[in-house]
Image (cartoon, rainbow, N blue to C red; front, side, top):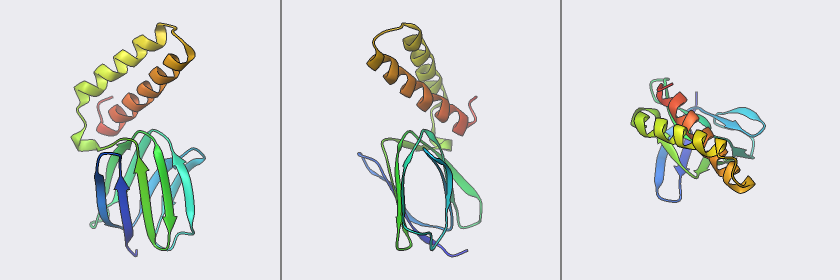
Length: 134
């Protein structure tokens, strides 16, 4: 496979800046695989695993909370609100976040608070799934 440029950024930092041969991401419309030469494309990402192929053909997996992916001219850019490599996730912290979100959902607060708790729960569950902590 032919490599292409991949850049993953968050509001705080550049998370990844290099080459890959394949990227697998989950968009609001479903999973998408990006290879070199992909047609121009843009989509929103959901809280899900993001898989980046390494040089040896294996995938390094990250937990992305939400964001977008843009592909053009043999280059892919992922903008994420938050992202962590699976092997760097603090499993105990993710479990605490999950429990806190579940408590907030049960509290039956305002719609806005419910939506925040729901988003927090999805992010925590994604982090636990990606890290193997579930």
